[in-house]
Length: 328
Image 1 (cartoon, rainbow, N blue to C red):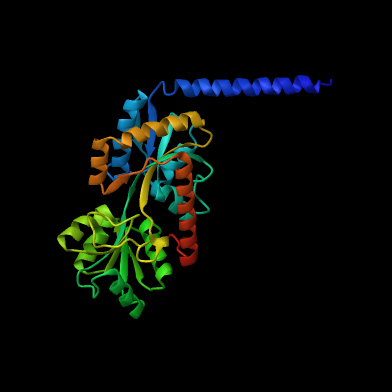
Image 2 (spheres, rainbow, N blue to C red):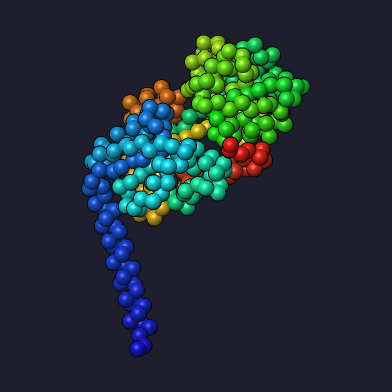
């Protein structure tokens, strides 16, 4: 049986119009029940604290609870994979970090159970946190220039600690080595705490770390900060240059914590969530708690956050390949 082309075209147009209308109505009514937010790490860390802080304030704007659920394991991969498989209706969201969206893919290219670029719709970056390279006070350099000169004069002599093999701080250390042409030996730890303790104690001379983990020792004189990964000099460390200022913009990589929806989520819902996040991130109480975590609010657009994720994704893959980093 032949179908008239004009009738077929009309039917397709009507179906498309009905689908668009249905999606618009659903987005307009959103949300009409609680929203689940998967945090792919254990309770109590910076990711968890920032997620709960911002989503609690967002819930006031949206008129529905945002229920945080911690799904830790495998460097965030378990929780991220569950979020990627959720229905794209705005009722299951997840928190993104540099680890889940860039580092995991670079370090586990063949067995990661989700695609960080294809499986998610970025909503907004909640907040950024500075990274820092510091030295033991006995290190024979007082500033970044002297630090670099000492490393170049003594290839292979000094060791640097990070929070673990193929973590973002390990990649930062290797990015530094690549950018500066220096040779320092990586010593992986199980978390920042032990690495900071050994840097203060002199078992290692250098540490790459998130600033909040090291700030107490920097302020107390147990560590000396050489450079920070941040857009401009920090008010709390006015004498410490940024990596970009020092001539190494490729190392100037803060960490971030953002909000994702599954791929295919209607943009009307994504924009509604982003608008609520922007209101939350302008709340003085939220800003104050973020500052206590060593973080600053962002609230960028979905398009800007998508670009930010892709840039970090490419950066991580490039460093892992150049440095031949492999997980045990």
